[in-house]
Length: 156
Image (cartoon, rainbow, N blue to C red; front, side, top):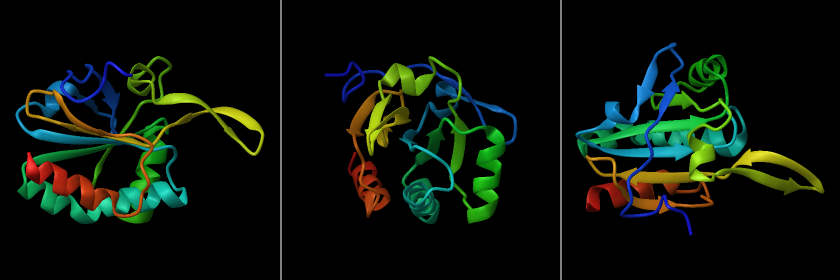
């Protein structure tokens, strides 16, 4: 069981944005927020997830919910990802060792075809206006995920 589950405070963070700025937990205060963690820019599942959240961004905004996508990719790779797929969702890089995904326990050892490597477990967090976790979606399956998160955000 993680200390970062529904009812607990989301950890403090500061991450680089594609434009060279920084986003922090305090920047999201005062509104609900969805923070979705994904493995890698420009891969099929991650592209689908980011484009789905981008397509629904106006609906999230109407519901008073900020969106933030996070991976270990660099700010430069995020800029390319945004331009290549016309993304409107905000992205941030969690590239530093011991960063937010490490603290959350979602940057972990994985095995694929007998190869062991470190990777991101696709996970989404819904936060309230004060940064308390309302809901966690672990091991996300991309199909219809953004719509499900929007429905949950509207319901709280």
